[in-house]
Length: 68
Image (cartoon, rainbow, N blue to C red; front, side, top):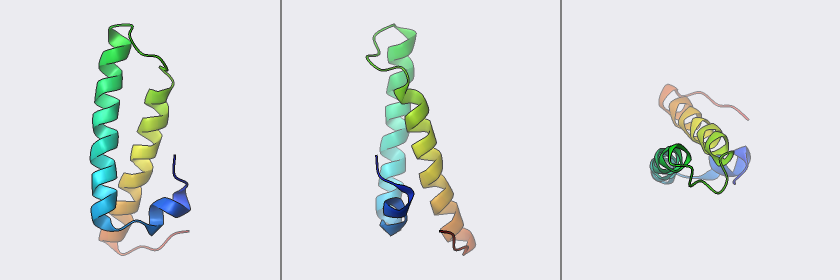
């Protein structure tokens, strides 16, 4: 997992791609957990938090805010 500072160094296009990948990962993990096939069910929470971080950084850029 990339740290928050490394995520902030990514371009907007890279962040959007990362958000898309994490969204798909969360979607797939939910299916795996529901079918009792998940190897690491805790990964859902990790992926959701990382997705939220990426979406927060994208939103800050839209609003023109600077953090970190």
